[in-house]
Amino acid sequence: MTSPDILDLDFDAHLDVVRRLTDEELIPGEAEMTDLGEVPPRLVERLVACGLFGITLPRSWGGLGWTMEQQVRLTFEFTRASPVYRSRFSTTIGLCSQILLDHGTDEQRDRYLPDMATGRCVTSFALTEPGAGSDATAVATTAVRDGEQYVIDGHKRFITNGAWADLLIVFARTGEGFSAILVPADTEGVTATLPTRMNGHEAGPVAELSFTDARVPTANLIGDEGAGLTLALRGINHARTHVAATAVGSATRLLGEAAEHARTRHQFGRPIAEFGVIEAMLGRSRAELEAARALVLDCARAWDAGSIPWTRIAAAKLVATETANRIADRAVQVLGGDGIVGDHPVGRLWRDVRALSIYEGTTQIHERNLARHLLKTVGDGHPVFDD
Ligand SMILES: Cc1cc2nc3c(=O)[nH]c(=O)nc-3n(C[C@H](O)[C@H](O)[C@H](O)COP(=O)(O)OP(=O)(O)OC[C@H]3O[C@@H](n4cnc5c(N)ncnc54)[C@H](O)[C@@H]3O)c2cc1C
Image 1: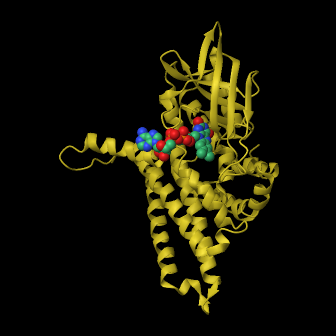
Image 2 (image 1 turned 30 degrees about the vertical axis):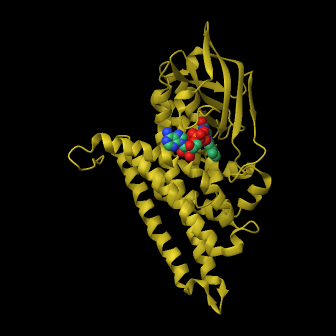
């Protein structure tokens, strides 16, 4: 439950709480989290108490009602700690809550949003399948009407929080198109299994979900039948913006760790920071981080101006995640063997940030979408920007 005093804070005071949570509890808790294989329950409670499940929902639904720019600035802070912490609430605050907020019925919103905003209802977004990855339109899971119920059969994979969720938003074929349907995770016929290994995100494993004759009321449909893709994109665009901010937070931490190591590690009788090649890696990383940070903030401001700035979201997600990967790679290089051997945070974050260029649209899908938009709108030889 969100701590009541958090609701009384203005944004800067909340940012300060989150900064202290990150430095004093989340970063020191990373090694324990990795050993345990999940976010320790005590730290999940801290994420909840500090209001992190509520940053995207309006006050009327029990959230904190922060703007997108404010959400992004908070994300820059808490993702200086392992991105696994963020994954624990990301699907609830982004992908799922935003779909319900914009497209849910009054009854669905009353029932779920206040609990989502206060961490009592963890929600997963179940779209990806073995045959439907980048091509979400290939969803093969079915939801067949039987009187007042949908009968769901199929298989989902790579589902964040699938093993911890109370509620799933499942995308399933209903005739011609596919639809978004609310499925309580304890519905008979729903099972979740975890993979044996993860490459990065070890403490936040994604689940496989199976649906065998799983029945839910037809009242659990969100929006219209066949509108699944539009609804999914509503949540996905929000999540893409947050993933871009996550990349900036991770890159900030990585660059700080690399700079600290360069200052304190001596070779050839001096700190390695004094070698020009090390300076070049740090300086270039700093410049690229500034650029990614500015683009993500600009994208957030465009959201707050009223529309969903999807080309800028695609650009920010692509640029920030690729930047984080380059900075992670350089940080490992600056650390030398310490970046590979043992459990230094740089080695762990290097593995973690790799996934950021894969989920919420791969880099190649964003390249493709941006190129198509450019070619369609270029007109008299000038690219068209959103503003
Ligand atoms: C840690 C993690 C968490 C995730 N969480 C969730 C979740 O909560 N819910 C959920 O539904 N899904 C989730 N996903 C799934 C994620 O969205 C998919 O992995 C992603 O969409 C890519 O699909 P795929 O893995 O099947 O790769 P594929 O689509 O098979 O892509 C393989 C390669 O082909 C390229 N490619 C594919 N199509 C094209 C094209 N048209 N043009 C150019 N290149 C192309 C891709 O860029 C990639 O390089 C998660 C994935 C990971 C790794």
